[in-house]
Amino acid sequence: MAAYQHTSGSREVAVAFYGGSFTSLSREDQVCLVEPLQALLASGEVSSLRVSTRPDSLDASAAAFLSASGVRTVELGVQSLDDRVLAEAERGHCAADVERAVSCLKDEGISVGLQLMPGLPGDTAEISVATLMRALNLRPDFLRIYPTLVVAGTVLARRYAEGRFSPLTLAEAVRLCKILLHRALLAGVPVVRMGLQPTTDLERAGTILAGPFHPAFRQLVEAELCFDLLDQLIPPAADGAGPYTVTCSPARIADVVGQKRANMQRLLRERGLRIARVLGDTRLTPFDLIVEDSTGRRRGNIMQDLRY
Image (cartoon, rainbow, N blue to C red; front, side):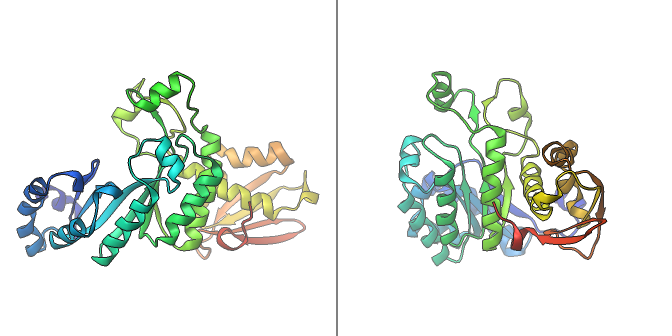
């Protein structure tokens, strides 16, 4: 912690127990983990604790213990809110467990993050969207969305090898997560991560056998939203016209252009539209796009105007 604070300036220090189901541990083990941190919480050296856990391992008693121990954020491994998908994936919990867990956490004033995993066995795009909408109705503080991957050494890997499971392709995952991200944005719920964080272990050959893994998955999704709005702003009658100038927030230029200029190339390939320049304008929000050519100027907003 001292080393971290030496380089982080005034940033707060939070302690996280992630990567497991914290409340599935015995209460004695939980006490052993949080008790050494209480003096640091009291002194302000640590601002708060956060843990991840299973929805069916959290009741009112567990939530009260977490709150009293300084835990201010809990992430729940929800994955789906469709009971058939949860049963097919052998998750061991149901949608009602999620609703109860969220209610218990909110009663204690604990922030709630929900982790969703589209593309599980038995899932469809329609079910994933329904899961998202049901999750948003629970009023979480944030979401993480991780499309399902086939990892070596898992039951899912065996199903995949036997031909009993087909993961989403990268293109399918991007199209689906574009809708999920857009709906979450409209609801005002932050999506703090999309796609698994690239790690040395994940990127080791033979670890991920199949599925939509990409080290910059979220950018692919946000670039797809930008493409859809660009495509929508230029009417079909304009096919083959141009060149166009696109103006956006400076932070959005890479998403408008797309990775390796994918959006520019796609507009040219599919509609014959040539984008001559993409400019940044600090007066625009990250959701605004302006398209101009010799015939006029059209402005759109991802949050207000996008249809799919």
